[in-house]
Length: 210
Ligand code: B1M
Image (cartoon, rainbow, N blue to C red; front, side):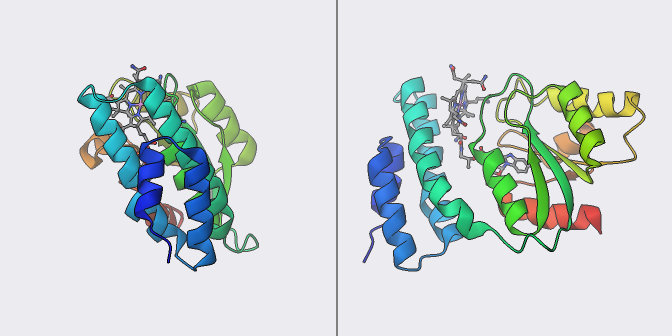
């Protein structure tokens, strides 16, 4: 039987091949993708982040861990896909300007897609103009903003203000999230929704379009 602690260790140690191998083994044995992600992969990223904070890991360690995490997520993503014919609405998602973190944002995008939303993923370091253009072009129902840095989360307000200035604030719901973002912060910047993680993001998105 697969030992998923090896996956935790592989991501923590930035070992892509081991990460992919254990993930494939887990899938073959019928382990649920969500259990693999929440139980081992996210925990490994949290640990590498804490080590970084304590000065026991450095940027290259973060990059290698992220690469191993991505390798496994790429395998799990197709298994999280739902029925594309039942679109619940259109979502534009991106990580805000100045911020290059995309693992959590991509997880949210995959979960939303898997649960029936049509997702337009703009990537990282996205400025307000690009967000607004994509919302307009795609007639999006929800705009999802992700930030992982305390410095970049403030840019969420700029995007919401820019939507307002463009006369589009009533046309699209805004959901915000990312490690430093809180419900109080979401309210403060005038967002319509906040979620702590990818599964809750789906529940919040459903509510926003109902
Ligand atoms: Co960076 N980094 N990083 N990093 N990094 C953090 C965020 C940090 C907390 C590490 C630490 O010090 N403990 C710290 C931020 C401190 C702060 O602002 N308070 C930090 C720092 C300081 C930095 C740099 C400044 C380091 C440097 O260069 N000196 C630099 C900044 C670069 C930039 O963005 N301009 C930097 C760079 C990087 C890498 C590029 C090396 C790499 C990112 C690779 C990539 O994403 N492609 C990286 C990584 C990997 C991390 C940690 C270790 C892991 C992030 C991650 O992927 N987590 C992180 C420490 C940590 O988070 N514990 C850290 C796993 C992921 C699944 O979780 O992204 O939180 P998360 O997403 C969750 C929820 O937050 C939520 O759902 C997701 C799934 O459940 N969520 C949403 C996310 N978006 C959402 C949107 C929603 C709803 C929910 O609705 C719209």
